[in-house]
Amino acid sequence: MELLLRSTRVVTPEGMRAAAVAVTGGRIAAVLPHGTEPPAGTPVEELGDDVILPGLVDTHVHVNDPGRAEWEGFATATRAAAAGGITTLVDMPLNSLPPTTTVAHLRAKQAVARDRAHIDVGFWGGALPTNLADLRPLHDAGVLGFKAFLSPSGVDEFPHLGRHDLDAVAARIAGLGALLIVHAEDPDRLAAAPAYGGPRYAGFLASRPRAAEREAIAALVDVARRRGTRVHVLHLSSAGALPLIAAARAEGVRITAETCPHFLTLTAEEVPDGATEFKCCPPIREAANRDALWAGLADGVIDCVVSDHSPCTADLKVPDFAEAWGGISSLQLGLSAVWTEARRRGRTLADVARWMSTAPAALAGLPAKGAIEAGRDADFAVLAPDETFTVDPAALHHRNPVTAYAGRTLHGVVRSTWLRGRKTADHGTPLTAPTGRLLER
Image (cartoon, rainbow, N blue to C red; front, side, top):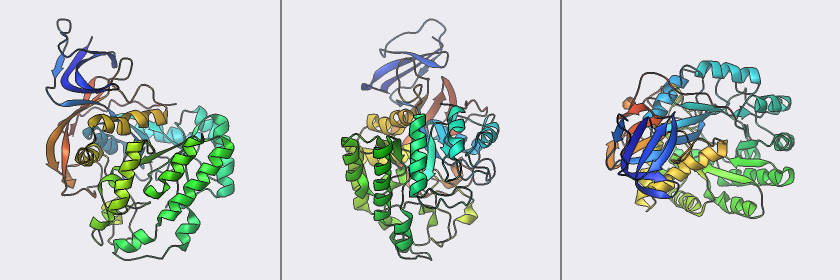
């Protein structure tokens, strides 16, 4: 035993209980009774009533490095993640230059990340209309799965899949036994929606109708049913698609879904005109839709809650919703934001751990992550769940101080974050040396 962490509240797969967590060689050796005394000389971290959660696993992060590192980089993104209780993130294949669509591009990204990561980092590959031949090499090189868009991605170097392309990609990925993760909005529905421009959020919301999500998810269900592909719906915004996903699962289609903190905590009614820090695609919808998403989590139709941290430089958040970059920066705040709303709705920290750690780890195929039990990595987030703080963008660690949560008071202060038994952040301050590893399938 090299370390013992002791708390009256430890979230384990069996629920929350008083326990002492023994760590050896960066792994959890055992979860012991709270009063267990370690061998003489073993360091003990006495955490009192603070809650020990499994380190969060965020499978939806746009790091943008290399190529657009002024938007975000591995050093800043992983520092922010560590400060927020995240111990593993999976980087999205687009918004960096080059995108992660060939093995050479993957190696370029890994070279940039290797000495800068404060937490563990995995990588999604990209599936384009033109890189079908690259999917197997990327799979063999260790990407955790493949991301595709069914509507324009917002960057020219990452085109979306048409219906024929989707079928071909799904067939190839099924043959690999891999995972296809999808931005699911139907381009025809988007093209037919009302044009928008200017500062009014209502106009932007009307331009991204719920039907666009539902039709794209219906197409995804169809191809998954025919090809046997394992598919995952990214950043589900519209609760109207939940019955479709539930029905597909009931008939054996291998489909999962995630949503994001901003869809669970923010509402369209409260977005001020011109406040493009709230712009994302698909969009933040009305309060009734938010309630239905929470019901989808409770019912198990939605599996994961992940950030979709998609940052940019502050100058790209112009007050015109047609022109502003779409993406919400919340990497450091997700745990506190979700817990603030979850506690109000009578949910528990065990629920939050399942949505934000256990399920994302399972999705990405990371068996060493996601739970406090013997044999897993000793990754922990230590939370003071009843304490509050007010979000100051200047105090956040991601590269550009823009966030939709500015000025909000949130419950849940992350006291410390531990990566393989070593403290990687303390009281919101990431420790200096990058100790993260690059993960492969």
